[in-house]
Image (cartoon, rainbow, N blue to C red):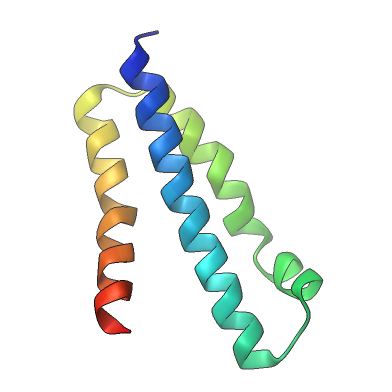
Length: 82
């Protein structure tokens, strides 16, 4: 395993984690619920973080860059919208 596999997987997992946390924060503000309720409501999103890490870890470089670009674009759009 090359070093860039680990770096790309870490970056992708971090970006997906940021997206999941932002979505949980938004859902918590809308419903006024506590944090444990937000974790239960977004369990699939929380499970996506290790799945994305594993997929990027074992994928070729071009696919890893595409997977990294998708959450990066989503975070950029969310930042520009607020």
